[in-house]
Image 1 (tube, rainbow, N blue to C red):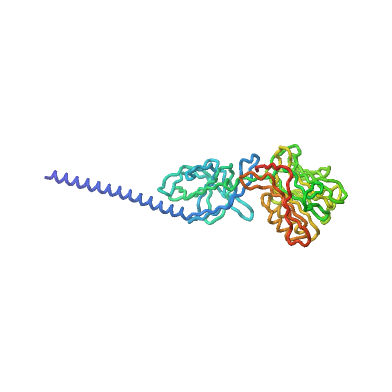
Image 2: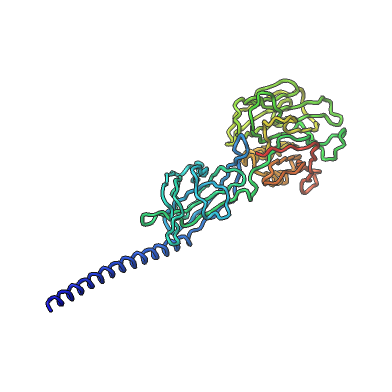
Length: 449
C-alpha cells in the first residue's frame, strides 16, 4: 500500500512537472508569436506612411565614350520616423525589381543643396542581412554604401549609368537589432530619353544675299552693334586644327568692301581665331568634357568700329580671357554666312547653342547685353527661345536676334535639318517682331553626347 502511494505521488509530481514545462513552452511560443505580429504590424504601418517625390531628370554626358550618362534628380522623402537609411544603386532592370539587390558598384550618391552648392552626405558602409516587414523574411545580405537622411527633407540623387539601366533606392529602418526595408523606389531615366544630341557638323546657315536668292529678312551686320555667341564643348583633344565656327562676311548692296571671315578652331587644348589671315590664341587650357561660352562683339556703339572683342567663359560664368582684334576694315552692311563644326570625321567639338544679334541704336544697349547674359547664365543645355523672343519683343532698338538650339532631348534620332530661328523688326510700325526660320543648306551630322 505504501508502495502504491509512493508511485502515485511520483506520477502526480511528474505530471505537474510536465504540465509546468508544457505551459512554459506554450507561454514562450505564444509570446514570440505575439512579438513577431506586433513588430510586423508596426513596420508595415511605418512603410505605408513613407512617401517619396522625384523631379524630372537632368542629363550630362560622361566623357570620353558617351555610353555612360550622369543623371541627377531632386528627391523629397517624408517618413513617420525621424531618420531613414537610404541605399542608392544602379542596376539592370528585371521583371520584378522587388528582388534586385545592390552590387559592389553602386554608381549612385546623395547630396544636399545649399547656397554654396552641392555637398555630399556622409556615407557609411552597411554590411547586414536586410529583412522584409511582412513576416520578417530575409530579403538578402548586402555590403553597400548607405546614407542617413532626415524626414521631410530634399536631396539630390546623382547616378552614372548606361542606357537601359535603372536607379534603385532602398529605404531601410533599423529596429530591434535588425535592418528592415520599408520601401523601395526605382527610376527609369531612359523613359525620358537618356542623352542629348548636340550638333557636330552642319551645312551653312545663311542670311540674306541677293546672289543666293534667299528671301528676306536682311540679316546683316551694321556698324552700330552686333554680337555672336555660342556654347561649345571639347569632345576629344586633337593636335590637328579642327574647325569650330566659320563666319563669312559679305558686303551687300552698294557697300564697298571685301569679303572677310572669322574662323574659330581648336588645336590640342588651345582655341584660336583667324580673322582673314592673322591668327590669335584666345585660350590655351581647354578641358575635355567642360563646356565653354565664347562671344565676340563689334560696332561703333562699343568703340569697336573696326575691331572685335572676343571673350571666353567657363560653365560657372568665370571670365577666362578677353582680347580685342583688329578687322581689315569697318563692318557696315554685311550679310553673314555661318557654318558650324567641321566637315571631317574628326569628333573634336560639340556645339549646343548659338546666337547672333544686331542693334539699331544705343537705346538697345541693355537688351543687347542681356541676350548674351541669358545664354551665359542659363548654360549650354537650356532652351532660351522664349527669353530671346521676350527680350526683342520688348525693345525695338534691337534689330534682330537669330538663335540656334541644337539640343535634341530624347532618345529618338534628331531631325535631318534644324533651322535657325530669327526674330526681327520689319518696320517701326510693327507691334511685334516678325519670325523667320533660317534654312540650313547641307546635311547635319549629330553627335550623341
